[in-house]
Image 1 (cartoon, rainbow, N blue to C red):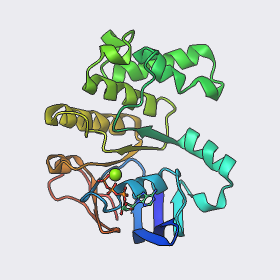
Image 2: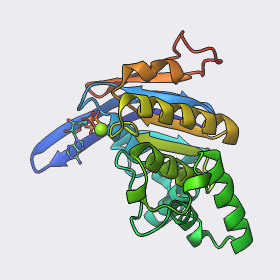
Image 3: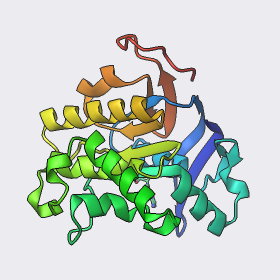
Amino acid sequence: MLELDGVCKTYREGDIEVHALHDVNLSLDASSFCMIVGPSGSGKSTLLNLIGALDRPTRGRVVIEGQDINLLPDRELTRFRAERIGFIFQSFNLMPVLTAYENVEYALLQTGMPKAQRRARTDELIEAVGLGAHRAHRPNQLSGGQRQRVAIARALVKRPALVLADEPTANLDSSNGRAIVALMRDMQQHFSTSFVFSTHDPMLLGHAHQVLHASDGRVTCEAPATTPMEPAAC
Ligand SMILES: Nc1ncnc2c1ncn2[C@@H]1O[C@H](COP(=O)(O)OP(=O)(O)OP(=O)(O)O)[C@@H](O)[C@H]1O
Ligand SMILES: [Mg+2]
């Protein structure tokens, strides 16, 4: 479902070049739960931006569901991203004037989906993340963990092939952070979507099918021995 083949990313600022990723090769099966760990500056966000088609590699290929993202013109890349990839952010990024329900439904407004189907899909996701009783609350009436649940529902409501989250637990205390990762894993299994997320919390390692270690722009892959699930191929 996802392949990176000889991927390099170099940022240029004037005469200065930053080699953020060097020769990254990996493949991710459909329906996997993959975690990226590594110190600050190791390339985690750069990798997620490439996997999410938010940026293009300097060299190498990023292939998502058989589509080499470098071969898509900008407008088609934007459409591909909107249809096939969901994003969850560290700071939730909810719209403050919309309720929990409306924040989720909003993601479907541009799709042309009929209203009844839109409502049914939104209801399903709001219930799935355990926010049925809070659907009419605005973000400032929700806890951090509840806000991130809204963001998870919003990321999934279009039924993307892949959901990406850059440090989704960074603004939560450790028990809420663990609850959010457990919810993401439940959602990954329920909707058979792949998740890739980054974290600084080593306590979360046991949740993943596959762990990517980023270090100075190099990425190595392991299937953790602690997981009871089938390890994915790297
Ligand atoms: N837009 C950019 N322009 C120039 N350099 C960048 C840019 N984005 C990232 N970098 C550099 O690329 C390297 C990798 O950064 P990246 O943000 O991917 O690290 P990270 O692992 O996500 O770190 P953190 O854990 O702090 O979020 C760093 O040296 C960073 O300074
Ligand atoms: Mg980062």
